[in-house]
Each structure stands twice: as C-alpha cells, then as structure tokens.
Length: 452
Image (tube, rainbow, N blue to C red; front, side):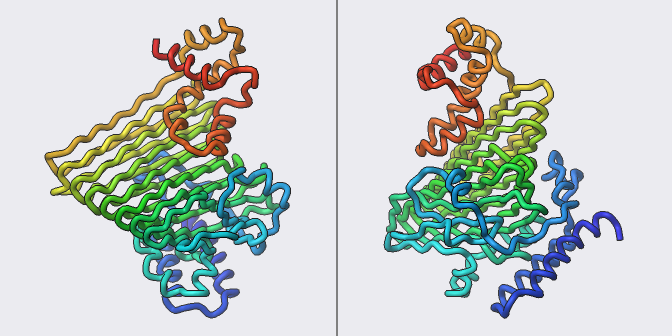
C-alpha cells in the first residue's frame, strides 16, 4: 500500500469504527455518508501540484492519526476564561461534541430555531436533508467529502421571515489538550428567511497544548432582504489544524458581511464563497490574519456575481512575524449578462520579520462589459521612521511596533462592532499595551506618521 493510500485508509478506518457504533438512521443520511467516503477515497488529500493548494502543504493532516471524541467534558472555569464575554444565545461544542452544560439557549426569540445538528436530525431530518449539502457537496473538495462522510454534529440556525435577533448568536468550538489528538467535522446550516436579521459569531478556541484537527463545512442561505453579519474568530492553539469551507447563497437584496479573523492554529485554510444570485444582493468580506512562529494561514475567497446589479467589496489584511507563511487568493467572477455590478478587492500585507512569507493572488474574471471592478495587493514592512518618531515621544520600541501594527489592522478592526472581539484581536496583534496610553489617539498618530 502506498503512502497516499495509507493516509486515506487511516481516515476510512476511523469512519468504519464510527459507523459500526451508529444506530439506525434515515436512508438519505447513510447514502450521503457513503458518497462522501467514496469521493474522499477517490480524491485523496491534495498535494501542492493541485493549483488551489499550491502554497499549502496538508501532510500534517493527511499523516495524522486522529481519534473521534466521545464526550464533551470540559472544565467550566477554563471554558469561562475562553468564552467571549458577550451576552448571547450560545451553542457550545467540545472537540465536536455538543455540550448542553456550556450552552445558553434560554430566551430564544420567537421565529428563531437554534439546535445542534444531531437533535435537528432526530426531530425533523427531512427538513434538514433538503438544504444540507446543496451548496457544498462532496465534489467541492477532499475536505468537504470527508466532512460529509463523518457528518453527525454541528449547528442548525433557522430564522423565520421578518425575524430580527437582537442578541448575537454564538457557535463556540472548544478544543482540548488531549493525550492523543482528535478530529471533528462540524456541519453548520444557516437559513435566514426574508427580511430577517442576525449577527452570528463562530468562535474557535481551546486549551494551550491542543493539537487537534477541525474540518468545518458551513452553508448559509439568505432569502430576499435577509441580513447576516458573520464573525469567524479563530484563535485555536498553535498546534491545532483547522480547515473550513463556507458557502453562501444570496437572494435578491440580501446582505452578507463576513469578518474572517484568524489568530491561531498551526495550519489554517479557509474557503469563503458567496453566490450573488439576485439583483441587489450585497456581500462584504473583511479579513485579518495574524501569524507567528511557523503558523501557516491560507485564505481563499470567491464572489460569484451571477445576477446584474450586485455588489461585492473585499478587504483582507495579513500580518506575519517570525517564519509565518500567509496565503491570500481572492477571486471575483462576473458571469455573462451580469451587468451593472461592482466588485472591489484589496489585500495588504505587513511582514514583521525578514523570514515571514506571503503568497498573494487577487483575480478578476469578467464576462460582462458594464461593470466596475478593481483588485490589488501590497506587501511591506514597518516604517522605521515612524517607529523612531513614536519612540521620541517616550514610547519603547516594542510598544511602538505594536501600535503601528495595530494601526495597519485598523482599517478592518474599526468595522468590528463588538468590543469583546476587537479586544481579542488587538491583544494578539499588538500585545498588552500600557494602560497609561490613549490607545485610540496613539493609533491615529501612528497612522498619520506612517502616511507622512
């Protein structure tokens, strides 16, 4: 047996063990699992000869020996320390297993259904079966096929037409420092009815020393005039492995805003896709990735303008220190006859070390002639003159570097409406800044100095 076959077989063996313990389930679920397993076996793990994975080596995943967690035991005190201090409706998962004890589902407003996937399948599997897998099927990638093969837990969020949810909805994924690494394959389904509005926070975090593999697939369906603000905050331990595929479908006049914030994880890959299928549909992608040590963070985005009079706007910032490696591949596709669209894309990267590396590839693919589109990418380092100017004001070098780095990230951070999230990002990017400084004023000064 070749090494490649052996890598695939390890995961198939884990799947066979899990299937042997499963009870009776609907035929369609078993059929989809089988299709996912067959597709995964046929494709195998991607190597760097595959264009979409040219800069990302997944051997750490392929050669891993990951078990499946069987419980959701987690110290309440540790969970509290990791949890975002936000008043919210919350579903919590520990290594992919739902934890009722760490969830807060009381007081859900009328018109909101928030359930772990396992319970949604038990209560009404036919209602879940239709949309589940419609946007991200087994053909999308090896990892989506693998997710489908193991699909059993995750979250289902449904918003009835006209429902406005005041509190954020948090999906919290906790990773433990286990004796042996584990894997999880969460599946998230969001269906937002017409004129509904909500904020969804997806938070991936865990104990120091965790070395687990998370393989997420998320499908978001927005009906006419639906509005969803989606925060994905990833601050897992530096040995964790994280792959996510997020696919959004937007109907007429819907608005989707994504904040993709990557701070942790040793190997991170995110695919974010939106299909703008109705006139007036509007998508905003804001991203910030920060890497240190030997972290590898790969962000792939795609905005498909499938209808005229649609708009997309993207701004991704990368900050890389030490020997970290970042990848950004953003693509805007304008389909034939999709006239009067606007598609803007910007990627800027800051290298804090001579050994840090970024591979950036912005793309436009346009098949219509009445459009406004632009894209661009830049890479640079901190301005030593700006550092000197701040130091002349009595600020030490480390703090000056932190302020300038924070100023670079500010274009994305200033759009984040939740203090608990922006504070986590600021701490990761700039470190603990002395409280005696007026942070807002100094960042503004740093930006001005950098522009001089």
